[in-house]
Each structure stands twice: as structure tokens, then as C-alpha cells.
Picture 1: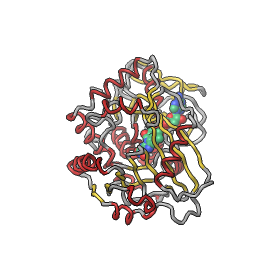
Picture 2: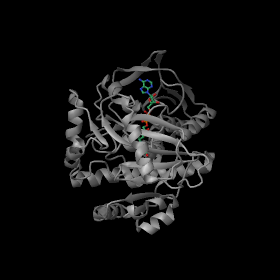
Picture 3: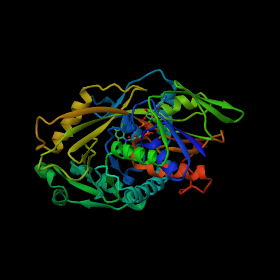
Picture 4: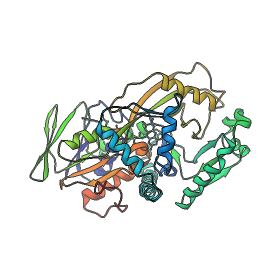
Length: 416
Ligand SMILES: Cc1cc2nc3c(=O)[nH]c(=O)nc-3n(C[C@H](O)[C@H](O)[C@H](O)COP(=O)(O)OP(=O)(O)OC[C@H]3O[C@@H](n4cnc5c(N)ncnc54)[C@H](O)[C@@H]3O)c2cc1C
């Protein structure tokens, strides 16, 4: 079957790879010159089933109002007169009720588990290297008064079937000796052993190469202008390089998916939430960390990626705006130094910003639309790297006419 995949981020590229493996004639279009040059380029690199519970835990929307008043905080709302932003925020608040929260967590988790299994199979089959670690991640707690709340969350995660263990400060340092200089400033930590990490950009490039070797064609430098619908089907896709036609179309345009889908009457509840990262060259630092560390107090994560260390965080609601506001990467560098006081000074630092394509309930939007030849693979929010291989597998299942590898309830557009 001829399949046209719109978007070559980690989601579109993984989809193209899975489809090419099944013998489909795949074309991928993207406006950039290479795979994963937008949101998938420099994310935190965490592959985290343990982060399946969405951001809007019960009580968080109220807490967020307080964070917004903190000028040094990680949440920034730039009020704009965009009805879709306010609609999205209302739905985000609504979905924070405990019954929605648990269901949304489980719906994301089933896909995260499938993804983890597919990624392990991919490592075996293709031998791709992407600066991966597979020893779990450590979430630090700094404030002793906050430990009971984190322990309750760990119990919630264990109840979902995840392996999360409390570690006292000495055990945290034994697991990651680079934390030793923090000494008394560590109250404890939680080791989530299902988690992994790696460089999404590197894997996307590897997947694109392997897909190309199986006959997929990547048409870069091509901006998609709109979908053209006729008689209940997508007839073609208008691009700056002319119309493209296929038997099936897969929409995987990240944060831009909403605008393109609107043109054919599909309302995707996706809002772009900007995040920042800073990648530091740590080649030659003998004391460098080996394990990804989450620091919820600083609302950041630091991830070793071979000879680089990446710290990422911030959530800025400012529409489709990829500009890098210098004070936020600077804040991340300060957070990184607070975590690793021995980080060598003078290291080369690369700032970056990307737009998380967030749904108000948390899980991505996969699968069918009312156009029988258009499938969605969008809205992966803060977890697109974690969910990429599983989402791609689901699309390959649907194109092949098979029962999807995970039940699609809670993951499709219907009812969202
Ligand atoms: C700071 C930050 C940290 C993050 N950390 C993590 C993490 O640790 N773990 C995790 O799992 N996830 C993380 N994420 C989320 C993850 O990066 C995203 O969910 C994922 O990259 C989304 O992938 P995508 O392919 O849907 O979007 P993208 O990577 O943005 O891909 C969309 C593609 O579509 C193309 N495109 C868009 N519009 C057009 C058009 N009109 N015509 C042609 N091409 C177009 C773009 O060029 C792009 O290549 C993080 C995100 C951020 C911002």
C-alpha cells in the first residue's frame, strides 16, 4: 500500500520505519532538511513509563495558579486572546479529577509498555545506538517535608504495576556517585526501574536510514499546506512542491497537527507547551553522572547522553512560538549546577526550545478519523519519545488491518 506520512519527527519517523518493515511503499514529507529537527531534536531524553500519569494530577490546576505568580518558577502563561488556549486549559482542569487522572495514566501506560518492548526488539534487530541507558532513573527529593507526598505518588505508581523503590540519601549517592557533593541536601529519592533514557534525535536518524534501506522515501524541505478532502476521503495533500497522493495518510506533524487538521474539519485538542533544554559538552569529566536524574523541586531532569549532559524543563504557554528566551536556558544551567556542583566550568552549552504537542487529558491521539484513509499519530505531549515506538506499531497494525497491539480505548479522537 502507498502510505504518506506527514512529519519526520520521532513519531513520523518511527511510523515510517514500522510501515516500511511491513513492505508498504512509504513516503515521508517534512519541512526541515533532516529527521527530528523540531520538538524531537533535544528533549530530555527520558523513556519513562513512570511518567505516564499526566501533568494534571488532582489539585495541580490550583497549585499551578500559585506557580504562575512565582517569577522564578517553571510554569509561564502568556495570556493571549486565543479561545482554543482557554478551552484547552478548562479541559486540562476538568481532567484532573481523580477518576480521569487514573484512567488517563493507565491509557498512556499501556502504550508506554508497548513502546518499551518495541524499542528493546528494535535494539536487537537493528543494533542502533542512541546513547541509551537502561538502569532506571532516580527522582530526588530535597525537602524532607515533601517526602510523604512523593511516597504516596510512588505507591500510586506501584499500584499501576510500576517498579518504584524508595532510597535513603546514602543509597541515592551509592546509585549515582555524582550526587555526593549534595550531601545533606538530599532528603531521599525514588528509583523507577522501568525507565530508560536515550537520544531521540540519534534514534530518529537511525530509523530514517533503516527505513530508507527498506525503500521508504523521505522528501525533506517540503512544507505541507493542507489536506484536500473529497467524498469522505483524503484525496491529496497540498505542499509547496505540489500535490501528493497516497492510499493512506498518517498525520504526525507534532504541534502543527491541529492547524492542518482543522482545514478538513477535525478538531484536535492539542496545545503547544514550550519547553527548553540545554546540552552541555562533558567529554573528559571523570565525575560525570551515569544515570538520569529528575529533580522535581527544580522541575528539571538531567540526562547523560554519552559525552553530553542534557538538562530540560520549563512549561511556557505562548502559542506556536519557538523563540528561545535566554533567561530560561540560563535558569536550566543554574539548576544543573545546583544538582552537580562539580560540573566543569567553561563547557560548551547549547540552548534549545521545542513545543510539546499536549492534549488536555494526557494520552496521545492515535488511529482513525471520519476519513477512512486518514490515521492520526499526534498529541504526544511530554512523552513523545517514550511513546514513539508503540504508537508507530499501532499505526502499522491499523494499516495492515490487524487488531492493534494495545486496546485503543482512551487513545483515539472519539470522545476527546
Ligand atoms: C523540553 C522538552 C523535554 C521533553 N522531554 C521528553 C522526555 O524526556 N521524554 C519524552 O518521552 N518526551 C519528551 N518530550 C516530548 C517529546 O519531545 C515530543 O512529544 C515529541 O518530540 C513529539 O514528536 P513529534 O514527532 O510528534 O513532533 P515533532 O518532533 O515536532 O515532529 C513534527 C514534524 O513535523 C514537521 N512539520 C510541522 N509542520 C509541518 C508542515 N506544515 N509541513 C511539513 N512538515 C511540518 C516538523 O518539521 C517536524 O519534523 C519533551 C519535549 C520538550 C519540549
